[in-house]
Length: 145
Image 1 (cartoon, rainbow, N blue to C red):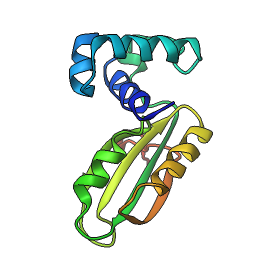
Image 2: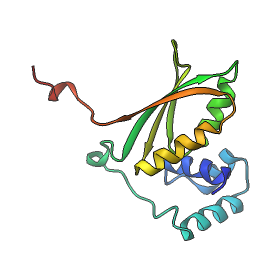
Image 3: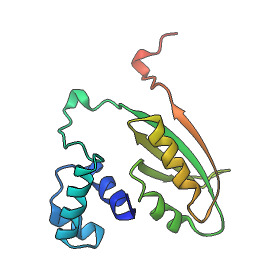
């Protein structure tokens, strides 16, 4: 998979029904290029299918993690743009204190989290990072004292 594949998958994760024309505009390539990449990703087994998320399915599944990131110099915009190319990255938050950014990650497997973290380490401008895998979400209604 290449950089364009990563960016395409990130867009499809946000909206699997996005029109090819819109994907092409967002990626800065032709519709034919988008169709070619989608077909190849399907044939290679990277994309297994497209699905509908129903209200009852909207609870978080898979592996979720938070990565705190320290940035060298004034490279926050560059680092943010490169992070969003990773399909595991869902959202990025600017913050204060020891860490400059917090990236929310979501994948289906722990191996995919590991791959995303490996690719993050290759991004120029990241000085340090620390990742916490989210084990459980405790909603106010489920907490008993």
